[in-house]
Length: 302
Image (cartoon, rainbow, N blue to C red):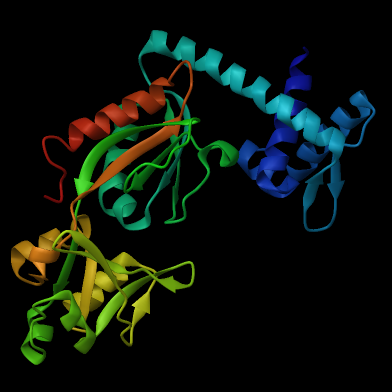
């Protein structure tokens, strides 16, 4: 295969993944025109139409779908060869695409990323901060950090790197105005600061005896940011249930006070998730190993 043929295939696959020639061009470091010409050249060589084009989007034709499925496998095989050779260097290189939860990623994974980039100059990292559960395979991520028990997926492997606890808390300022709740049912008389995901309030989960109890007690303020809820709780606007990696510093200094500790659910695992491959890339393996080392024997928020 001539090298320009491989470049055309890469441009085609990137265009499908990105949804447009413009986005693909940004990812590949090319012009939009160059990406479009690569796809046209590929169509001309194969004598089929691969993409339906509109001013706003791209979609695969039937022939394009067949080629895309095969090309993804070809490019993955090439990545596997590169990764296998990289083992000989024992130094991570290339681009690592990571999906991170917003608060955990910004507060505690970002310093780890900065350390890795300093230690491994041949490594590049593309980090996406989102609380959405991405599909690693379909969206082309090498690694994701997720919170909670794993979901069955034979395409993925998982490794627990730490644990976190959901903590119900309020500021001394708030508790000076309102009586401290003694049971989860007492939350009905309080301003509760809930996290919003997908347009709905996430329930607060408690353990009452042997049973789990989920409570949603909407107050006047709800937000889709754990860090914003954290700030509002410190300011005395209400009670929040937030991850330990967000609030533990304020619990130690007394800016926040833990409530309903006897009803808290068990700690949840924080896991590294990555595609199941015959050869695990050094950049994935060493990034996870270094994260485990940095967070052992306990993570930085404990």
